[in-house]
Image (cartoon, rainbow, N blue to C red; front, side):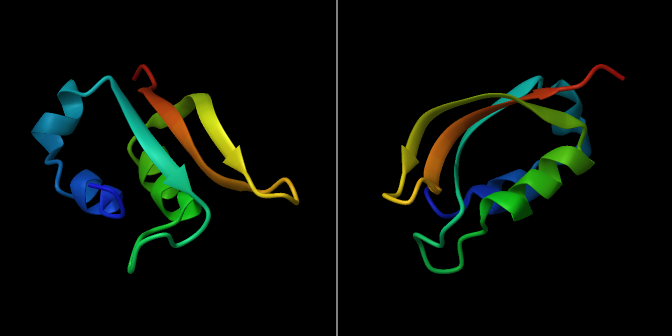
Length: 79
């Protein structure tokens, strides 16, 4: 679902969201696909839904050191 991650997240209903303990997702700071949401936009969804970044791996950086994309593991905080 590359480029449509936010659509998947927005499609999770409240009952499903209660059962999800973690989400592993590829994030980017650049629009690699038309209409794709960037890291900051998707991160807002995670924060709003009580998830925190646990781990960032497979980091690909540009020559000037900016992150192009990375895989990130978000864990739901305990209530």
